[in-house]
Length: 64
Image: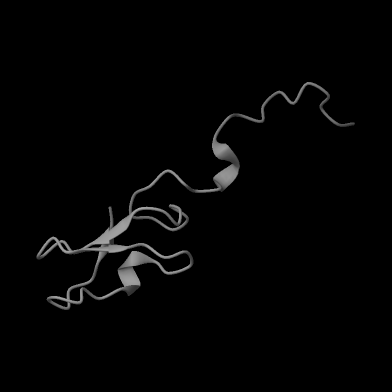
């Protein structure tokens, strides 16, 4: 039998991401930032910031 009142479902967002931060599924918006020199680049959808190298110094970028 299904739960007609949807009790126990919580409000955690269903794992859709979009909360920002440096974790998988943190959303397509924002910037990738270099922790070494501070250079920012626009974060692209489907491209994790940790896979992007800073164009100025070559360090691994992080999500802002």
